[in-house]
Length: 211
Image 1 (cartoon, helix red, strand yellow):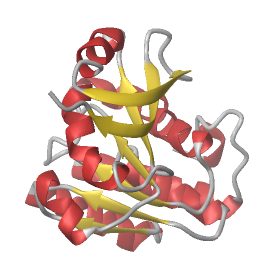
Image 2 (cartoon, rainbow, N blue to C red):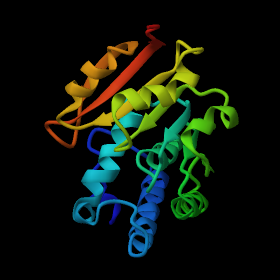
Image 3 (tube, helix red, strand yellow):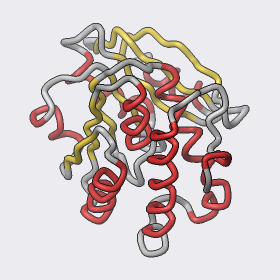
């Protein structure tokens, strides 16, 4: 991948950020030969399916925020956000990934790209104790919305300014309908820049419905 191949339409970034993204892409493809970081069928469209899809999270909330990225896996969207934070000169991404091999990859990616991030090789349920506060939460291809809200509540309930951004596919409305039976929240649906039937759900003002 070269700087002209980066699928970041509408997102102008510096030469240094482009170089970091190219470095990450090369490292990812090297590790993906031995570790299942993403579905192998998606590697042919790596830039569009993973880098651009992840970059839209930063585009929705581009400030120097403190992020928690749940189930970071191969670094999407967390590492991409952490690289793009160089554009605003601040912020941090806490990458929560309990799989030791994937956590090792994430540490290597941070070291080689200078991404503004740290890795927490712990279960998501334990993360609020280690990471007491954040401004924003992200997750991609991790769990249904109800469970994501359960994971996010320890950060969002005490902080009304905290926002969550969750990638969802074409069946997202079913997940939303299920979640509203247990949670109150404000919702904005952002059309995905990558897939016509997909969205990014932006969640704010989360509270549990007492039954």
